[in-house]
Image 1 (tube, helix red, strand yellow):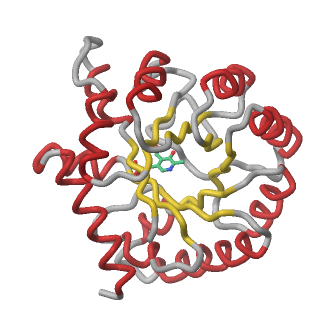
Image 2 (tube, rainbow, N blue to C red; image 1 turned 60 degrees about the vertical axis):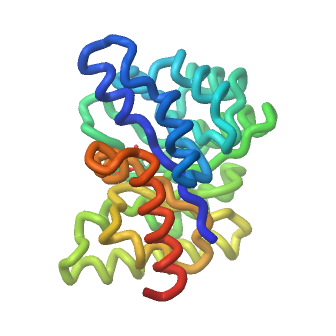
Length: 243
Ligand code: PXP
């Protein structure tokens, strides 16, 4: 079975639209777990546009499943990860003007900084994953940086879905997954996944975990969070069963 990491950032996005106290991402933790979430994922951005520092504390206090903290490779974030100790940290690139994470972390060109951050975070007893494009050089660099896992960026695949370009993106993801697994890295994937496009990703070799946010939370507006998570869990199960 593949783990489903539910990204609840957008609950905080709605709250921050008014900068008041609701909806609270901590409520989302309980409902996501009731729907079958295997992990809760939150991104503490440097600009604090959605998740706040107190959300990280609250989510860590209430979550019964592991918490995955997405963060930029900065001294501030490394210090937060080392003191708060989520189950796993996923290091991502961050640009202030972007609407969401664009492209993977360039581990090749930032190897020294990523390696140092990885060493510090692992020393604190926290697992490390790196969010990278499906590129063998990036996978190799992730291994060299000492990470435990990679999260393959599925954004280009999701963007190309239902067009001839999707097959090429899927092939890149397939090759990167096989290569990473061969190096002993755990393989996760995420970004832009929804109920329509996730099956081919779930069927890639060696995928252990999918992290899904926008489409799942968007669906929750209409069907409720517990039901939305359950539908995603069921879709993953169906995909693995071959339908
Ligand atoms: N994985 C990572 C590393 C991300 O940065 C994001 C977006 O926050 C996701 C997965 C989830 O992407 P989406 O919101 O498109 O499902």
